[in-house]
Length: 367
Image (cartoon, rainbow, N blue to C red; front, side, top):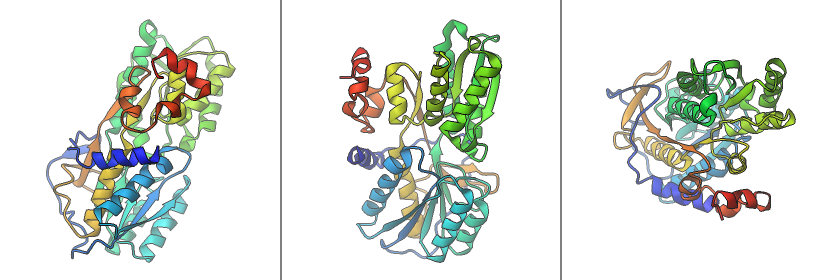
């Protein structure tokens, strides 16, 4: 599966990426031209990822970025990796260590977009450019790539309303399980979802889930069931697949079967979609995003401009006109598993349709 994902990444490098960003976009431009004097291929890229509970980081992001850096530098570039395991203080220390070790460029997926700002400034002061990856970090970043995060929320909200059908009415109670408040993307997801759901259903309980942890989502869901009554909940908005797993465990324990959304197309989430326990996920092409991040990092590390890579600009709370590439998203349901995660090499049918899921897979034509 790793080989398939990396193969997709190679193809993604050739894709023309249209920018339709969810942060404030503009077409003007500051000068984000790298670190000045051009360097050769023998650059060191510091890669800092936020956590290892979500399957994507170790399975897709890390190996794809490593492969792309190697390919883009004729085998001379290297990646130095650190994972913060959801601890912002640890991540700041990791950035500081990489600055001390004089890496040529950093790719940072921030645990906490605000807390990382001081370390981003240290890197900038040391002449090390920073690519904000997946989350719009604060501080003087040089480039940014992510998905259209507000569109993620819109996609989830629309899907939940579709799944509810006739039950989608202002008096129908749903539970909203948002992500961690330290993650700027969570605010975009919530904003997009609320734009679809507000006024059309009753958001009877809403939670900002600490650290995105499934066990915290499970506890929140148990509290919502206790407060609202199990017969009164018609659906659950879950911001990602990991939390959806915790939510569905609580729902099943209470004998409740209602539509639940998700995001990330994690294998367990796809399998829950196959069985009908989860209604949908949001499919995001991590190979495409990771390939762009690597391309940006290599260019900046060599002191080159990003004009041919980044086709738009976004404003962060602290930095204006950041060269950016925004990657689109797709609603994943049981109807398009073949056309998305299987076609793009995320998973094979055998990955999804293990013995436990063979019968359910056969019912939806996965065999």
